[in-house]
Length: 145
Image (cartoon, helix red, strand yellow):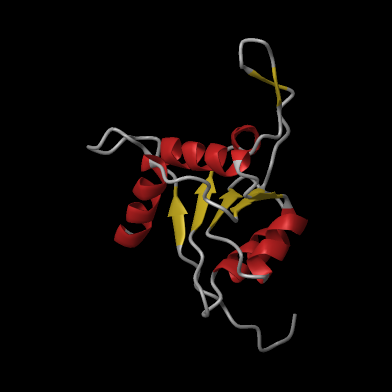
């Protein structure tokens, strides 16, 4: 980095586990959106895929894990989301294993329970998939914050 490093302001949204009056929490809505995007092949998982999607401006939403230890990783994703041409909403979640499960980085057993979950630090939604109540809830949440 140079001596004339600029500080980029990023719009971060912390995920709350408490459900608002509508009955749908941000975390539940995010889980539903990620499942729909996974079905429609609209997820970019990991740093390489996520940075490509963010750089090409193909992303609609970025999800970053708070427990990520690599500071440069976090700075890169935040900077790509905060570019002035098109601000991309960034949501931070607390657990990388939970994000990995939502992004499909696990094996499901016969009962549908997740086994062998791989942690994921960053997921980008490139294609929302079909119209859903979770998507509308998240879009409304971004506009209000």
